[in-house]
Image (cartoon, rainbow, N blue to C red):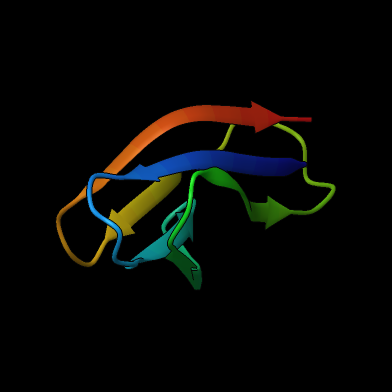
Length: 67
């Protein structure tokens, strides 16, 4: 499984985002541009809960790809 998200900032600064999968903390990413960011990688296909927690305001999420 690979999950990627397209994040857009309302301002030019960066935003730290925590990535959680099924209630387990995975990592923190720094978002600073309109691009796809790899969020999760693995081979455990099935039903999961992906939670993204921005640490400051100004983040918009638009597109996710899973495959």
